[in-house]
Length: 135
Image 1: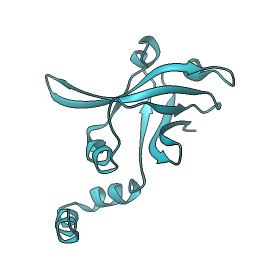
Image 2: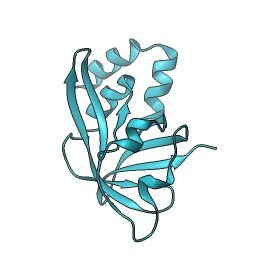
Image 3: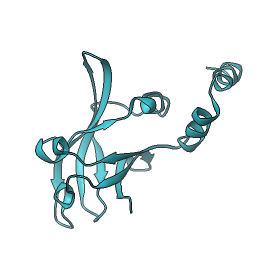
Image 4: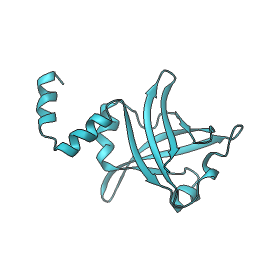
């Protein structure tokens, strides 16, 4: 895509869409409310809101590729972004594969109703997902 195509695409965005685009230039950030599915299922799924699918693609974040998940207490887990299709169409979910609990509680530190910020970003050591508490 050349600069003229990019300018054309940007001109189609509404002001709120443009603001969201600018906020997500170097990473993807959204809030998530901890639910029973997250706590109950072994993969601890976090569904990525549809409005961020293009950002995932633009940042070149690949699906089904190992990445690191960082929890608020410093513990880490392996995970990946899953891309699937259901009756309503395409969806993306973050899935947790395993947790390294040497330094913290991992998933067990959350309870239903907790609000967290989810950040998907690339760093020198690869792609990462950071989960932070929202006060």
